[in-house]
Image: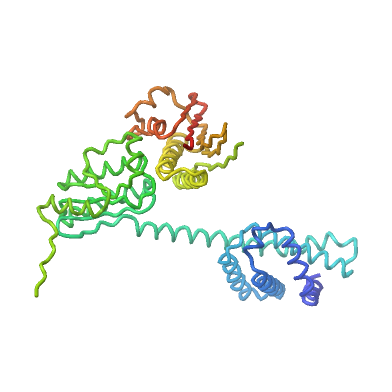
Length: 277
Length: 133
């Protein structure tokens, strides 16, 4: 049965692939077809059939590495997993139908062949799903690390003044990091004034405000003053609507104004140099 | 005419997804930046309440069109422990989790209409609407 199927697929490769592509296209939704270009689609289909034939030749180590490469390629192409898995199922049926059509199998053995094909392709689809899952897991954990890296740096700009620019959404994990970095940085940079810049924070709700207030209180405890800068007009309105009390803070609309104020607080100012002739 | 889209709240990142959905709908309906900020902040509060107190729930955004008025309605539904004393949670500064206690009263001020339904042990249903002016 094995050799029969191999030779059949080898002989009728083009026909099978064409039929397969047609059927997959029929089943896939519009969105999918517009994303997948014809060329890539055909190329990948041929590659896939070659891969299956390799599986049949039972050269295990080469097959495994090739399968991994293929799965990774599909993941990179960004095809939805449902599309790939249903495509695999369709392939089984196409081969089966083609076998019948070419009268390679008798009526009473149809079921047997279908079961055989199914069993043979099952580990393949399992491997693809597995690669999908692990690739996504890897991507997610990498992104988590990347996100943590750009989390909340405290930058010493001039003596006694440090700035913490916050960009993006603040969740509980980041809030913790902000507090830690802030306190550590204030002590190690010997900052007297710290500016927390929230220009890049899209939404300031009570949770964010609560964390910022707590951070400011902690900064106060280690002997520095905290300023909240970069409050956009719409954020100012929502803060007032929410009824959050930021009276304990010095707040400014932009980082630049905050910087001027911070210099003032440390008895300094920026002066322009007189031109020297 | 109502078109609804929902986000299931299970973890903190779903709050961001709900917020994004709300902002997009608000933008589509033609709300200004200030109202967009109000709506997203209100969604953030309600979604966070689901995450913190109920563990899981749903946040839906409705597009409303009534008597020539266009509006956006936030519906936050959960089957959590419910709120024993609604009057108390609507007071400023009341919190059971050590927060600021400005969430629900804040949402009422951020939006135009606000309605809360809750039974202990059965869950909470909060609806808040903002009308386009």
